[in-house]
Length: 179
Image (cartoon, rainbow, N blue to C red; front, side):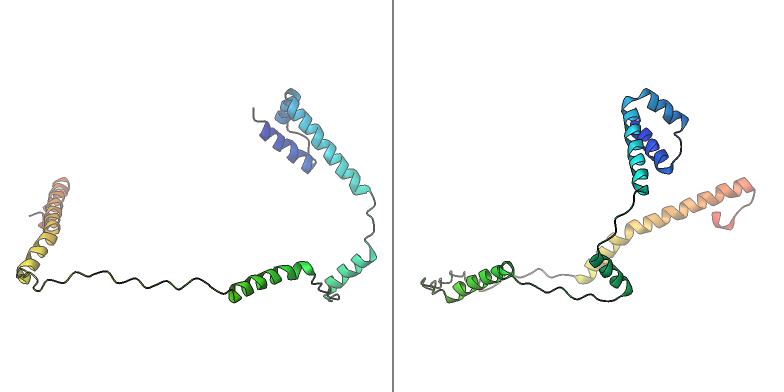
């Protein structure tokens, strides 16, 4: 059911060189896929251990000298830059397209300007705007804006008085703010 967990446990045990946990061993005994996975992973570990004992071939002299000079901070001779046809071909194509665009003689005539559309004439006299009483308008706006806040403050004061009276009754004191 949870083979991916068991396989993770198998891999971890083999990587660390430990024996399988009893539950994992029991699962490997029951599950053919996990048993095959365990055998494959054990074979990989065995091959890696065997390859560790094999002699490592010597690096070529030119590579060894280059690595050692890089480690010492010496710069090796720069590689020559070779600009072949492949590098110059795109530049040549772009230059050719630009030249064709510049040198092309445009045989089309210039478009004729269109006449401006007729504009409606403005009316001679605009209708008169009604007179605005700014003082009265500001008072109305102030009343409409502040009215909900005034009601909320009154409700809060009432709630505080009620809470003060209740607490005073519980403690047995009469508070000054509850009057």
